[in-house]
Length: 300
Image (cartoon, rainbow, N blue to C red):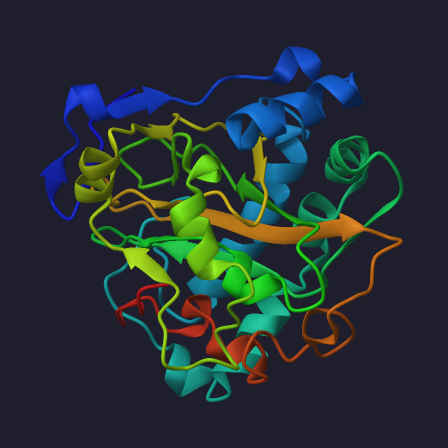
């Protein structure tokens, strides 16, 4: 791996680790479930056809190129400016249309991912219609958090699937998982039953400084140089975020996360349907992705 950074600081070698590759277990549902229980995540290489990933990525970048955010023909180099507000005043509607592109959805909701998730659930599964698509520019990162406060209103048998839309090296600030955090009962107890919409006096952010969190817990930050077609999944009580994007090429990192669940479990209506309201009810306009690329993200 290359140099990993958090808040502009290099992650010490003793605090950085590689995700365990479970690709060899892909055909064994029981083994995948055991790995998820043991590690808090499952990391698989080459699950999705890279050509399909490339098509999904190209579809997204073309939309961003049209609003002046991506250099034409550059495969994702940020221009440093944006005309998104001028050309698409309804930012939420624009981002929903980008997030529902057919080539992208063939990747995010396609049979390759569905098969993996059915093995994890040991039965039929359903993916949320509402997708968290992120286009990360240099200097951007996502703080550490558990997903429980956002997605467990109905039940906690929900899994997050994170996909890179194209190669995503450590320098591009990909996903990072805090090793062993799915066993931190003191921290998990604070988010179990916590709903970010119904309890606004609390924060879901666990701390933007992942290095400090890892040091305080004697844990490592686990990541990888991701490649197009890779997949990582985890449950609602695994602490995760992203590293800093400090790649000097100016190339954006395109990634998404989609929540999956057993088809037999009740659905949270916020995330399903033709026009899902999302966590707060504001639709796609509530997402970081809806912001023009020259605007800062909020913590999550």
